[in-house]
Length: 302
Image (cartoon, rainbow, N blue to C red; front, side, top):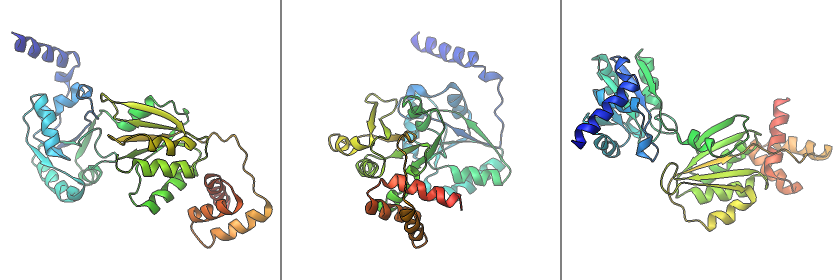
């Protein structure tokens, strides 16, 4: 009796959502957003599309099958990972040519956003087939909604380069902008990133560290840049992280003497802007972020 009641409830939900009256075109690639941790966040439309797809292209078929089994969906899966995207895009195109409906998913969140899938989407569009987004959870939007950043737009960067030199250069460039920006980071690299931010960012810049979004141990920690290093040392890295760096408060005016401006301009002609900013900041005792922003401003003004 309980199973009949559950089935009736599911059918009623589908009807209330108006899914039965919607179309599901053939020869279409469906980009299906999945939960980022809490399985209850999956949408009715996502379940409807997954259950009616001819095949599901997944980043990790083992992880996707767990979710499919939870919702009693029995559709075949194929692997589409970062290192086989181009090859598998040809397979997907062949299926679309046969009139099949292909659902593309990642392990968590929305495909093609700092996850495999972008190359597949590009190849499918290039061949003239339709790509239909099925909106779902996104870690960046979820984190932004609870971080309290200044409502003036933001720059989404995703994962920083794993190499220390490239990572610091990328951070220097991001911090050189005034706008807020958002990063993703894995637990085994989070301490290095936070330590770099502590060194490179203005001490009073507001930073929010979000962990395990939508899961049982979800946390949002609000810190100033100067607090990051000590905080990271006292916290054991666990789970996936989203780092949200608020826009520059811009309270302190940054001025360079005419003499400093002259030799820093010359320095920029001899090396990349990020390196010049680092060297100049050490010499004049200024914050690297301030110097880098000044250099960018100079370049924009010719």
